[in-house]
Image (cartoon, rainbow, N blue to C red; front, side, top):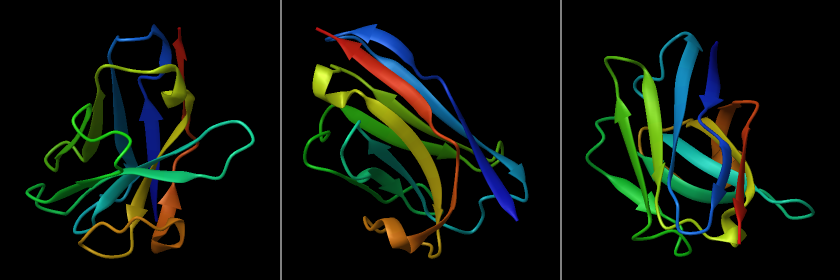
Length: 124
C-alpha cells in the first residue's frame, strides 16, 4: 500500500506562487499516473492536473492551464504542482492521488490512494 503525503500549502496573495509536493510513504508511485485534485468549501472535489508514469504526458483542467505545472521525480517518489498567478478562486484543499492506470484520468473514482490534503488560501 502507498500513502501520498502532501506539503507546501499556505497563505499567499493573489498573483503569487506556491509549490506543492507529494511524497510516497510506503511503496512507490510507480508505474502509475498521479494526479492533483482540489476541493473548495461547499464544493465537490475537482481535477486539477495529472501526469503519466514517465512524466512526458500531462493534462490540466481548463481553469489552471498556463498557470499550473505538474511534474514528477520518480527517483525521489515525489510529484509536484507548481502554481503561479494564483487567484482567490484557487483557494481549496489540494489532494494528491495515485491513478489506477499509467495514464492520468480526470475522474475521482479513477484514483485509489489519496493523501490527507494541504490547504491553499489565496487572498485578494
